[in-house]
Image 1 (cartoon, one colour):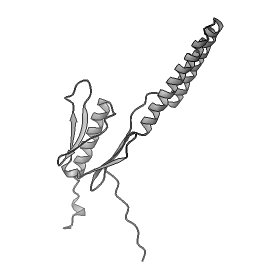
Image 2 (tube, one colour; image 1 turned 90 degrees about the vertical axis):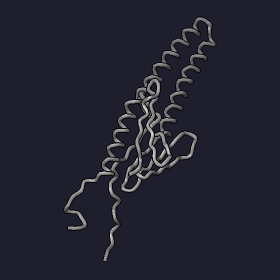
Image 3 (tube, helix red, strand yellow; image 1 turned 180 degrees about the vertical axis):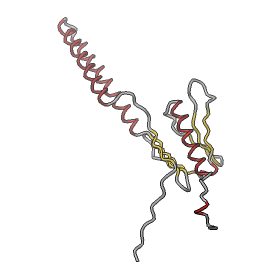
Image 4 (spheres, one colour; image 1 turned 30 degrees about the horizontal axis):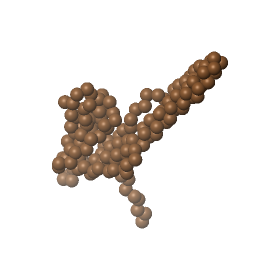
Length: 173
């Protein structure tokens, strides 16, 4: 008699939230080429008139822009919120730069999703709260993205709390 492993049911919600970076890798390459070319041509012109230190400072400017973008991209890769609602729990895994990953687990039946929009200048917050515990999710998202995530969370929790009752699968039949 062969036994098969039971497959884990599909999650009701599985979100990977990451900060948005508006400049693609191809755009970054183009930007660096334009800045480098402009800096080089301008530096050569300054060299020709005898202002040789300007050439080095223009190179440092380009290097500074390059380093700033690389740091920004690295932080985007190391920042994420993974929200997953399965049959028995809502888990949130938070990954932040220079911090250990954190996992939060909530019982979905009692969980509330609060979108605090009473804050100034688009600084609203998306907070999960249950039994005195509060967790902000997606702090790096824009206001519209936070509202969309709140709607997705509320919808998934509604489906969890009010599953479709199919009489043919009832225990009594």
